[in-house]
Length: 221
Image 1 (cartoon, helix red, strand yellow):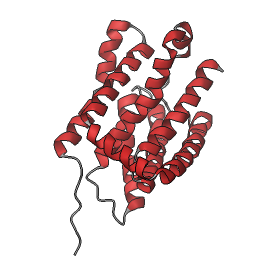
Image 2 (image 1 turned 180 degrees about the vertical axis):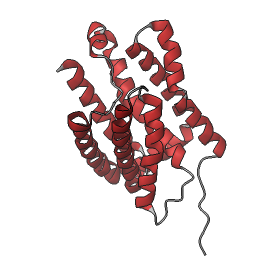
Image 3 (image 1 turned 120 degrees about the vertical axis):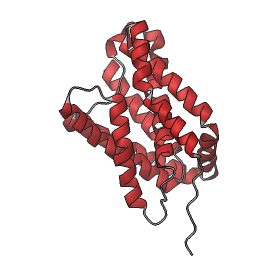
Image 4 (image 1 turned 90 degrees about the vertical axis):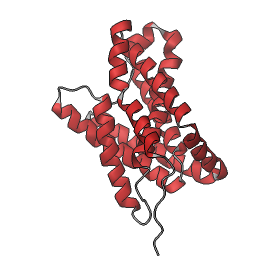
């Protein structure tokens, strides 16, 4: 007899977490009206959103951290695999697709170098936490047993839409389509890492490494 799948998160927690994620563009616009700088506004918005999600979903983070800690070999292997996969995907995007990736403004960072570490961490580590926690919340009620490939694809298509809508400026349909394609592949990659390691920690670390490298190349190269 097939056992009914049990989610680890309540529907209330999922809805609130996703609402916090979806509020990113709203908070960004409000802060932008005050500070008048897009990089500063997004840095504040990401840090605030990340703090709220980490605190609110602390138990979820703890579960995934303990899974990675209990099986460090798998965590390390899939962190390396994920870093390579996301690096290749990002290179393809930057070279051919030209989809939108949230990045700080180089001029702003160079003019305020004292704030560079905080800005770069917001666009890498914090964004990695935000994306992975939100992605996990969106897909938590999906029964992944015996349907791994289907769920990986479904995760990419579903959260790819949400990720694109939240971060991509409207007005350019071509940019939206290109970015959605990149985001689908990105989320599918992180879903694969989660599926193989049973933790979103490898996905967070892989994403963080590539975003830090991309920021360094974009800002300081």
